[in-house]
Structures are given as structure tokens and as C-alpha cells.
Length: 146
Image: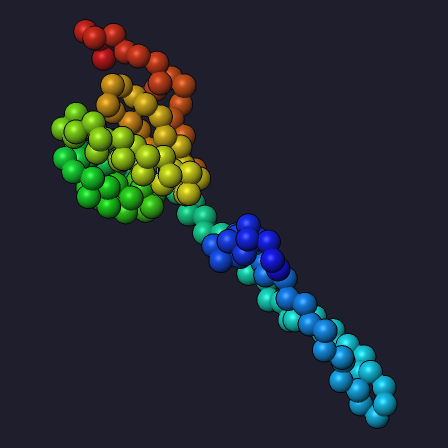
């Protein structure tokens, strides 16, 4: 290995070092031993899929959170994980923390098979898996009516 580029790559861990041995193979009773290759035992990893089924009648609350700091994300995550829909109002947060919280919330929804949708400027609805919002509820309502 006289190539300086190859030596540098090996030093930085970007390439494997090629080792060349010119030693003769050991002999047993005048014969070369046969290489016995045994497959290593492989234990497959199966992660249990945790699916929390929430009956529509079981949803008795929707949590509304007005976070002021990023660390308020823990409250959002714990309730969402327990199957409670969460409304996040970001009006009291700085723009940088609001972006971080939205990134966290979208990862939370993705990881727990939920969904996230923007309801209004700075307001997001996180719905757990098994909970749906009907199309009738999504339509904007008139300001003066109910």
C-alpha cells in the first residue's frame, strides 16, 4: 500500500486496509486443513406493534395546549400517546421554537400513525390513530352563526 491517497483514506476510516499475508497455510498431518465455515446464529428482531384502539365513544376530551416554550412538548406527547386529540395554539411562542415544536409534532404523529392538520394560522390539530375528523367538521363556519 504505497499509494498516499489510499493511506489517507484508510487513516480517515473511508476505506478498508487491504492486508496481504504471504505466510504459508499451516499443515496438519501433511495436508492443508479445510476451512469450515459455520453460519453465525441469527436471531431476528421483531418489534411488537403497539396499536392502541380508541373507541369513538371513549373520546371524551380534546386537549388544547398554548405552549410558551419547547419543553411544553412533553405534555403534548404524553396526551397524544394516550389517544387524546390535541390542539396546539402557537400564538405565544417565538417563531424558532414554534418551528421546532411543529417538527416534533409531525414526527410524533408519524411515529404513532396519527395525523396532523393545520386548522388556522398557528393552530394545529393532532389526531391519534383510529380517530377521524369528519368532512362536515372541517368546513369553515360563518362568523355570526353556530
